[in-house]
Picture: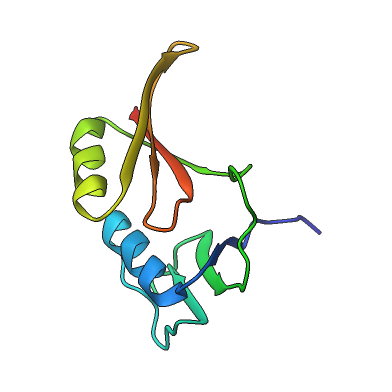
Length: 116
């Protein structure tokens, strides 16, 4: 039997609000029945893996050790769009033969958008 990735789980203060940010960024709907406690993006669209947001009383302090990397030909446009949706630009990088920008979502979770 093969192990497969089902969910990427993100701790949050407000699951529905944070799912809304990611849904907008990824052009996917927030799945039905989203609440402040629990929400998903990608389940009804048949996407894999599904982004799952769970409300927790105390988020892990400091930098998240796992983050999402996105690539696109028009990556600068996606960065500007993410910022317009509420992301914070953390830094621009040109290392290891790659270019990318690190951002933080509205709750401070880091993610990267880079050149394809």
